[in-house]
Length: 109
Image (cartoon, rainbow, N blue to C red; front, side):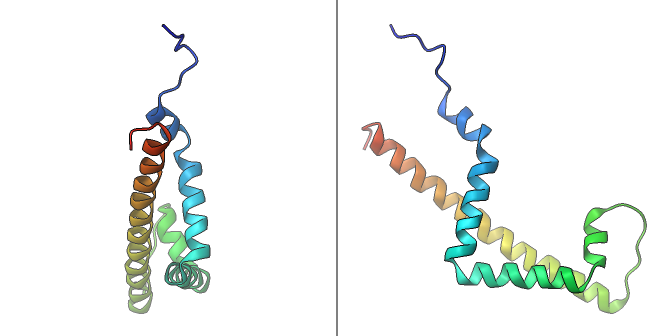
């Protein structure tokens, strides 16, 4: 029987390095998907042009918005939800791709 004391279970390794995996996948997404990159830039510009968005997202202290600012914030949330959805899909499919590669490597496929 082999000594498994140094073995780290795959799920644990993935969990421990998930932030790195996610960052790598998103960085790659920015480079390879024009729609994602454009949406990311649009959100970044919206935040740069409207500093109150950061204050709202920070959540500290009180803030009041004009009707125009409220529209801008609503647009920010709409765009951010689209971006988050794209990221979740990318990570979901990346997980499947990694799983298939792993199964091939261990001879399960």
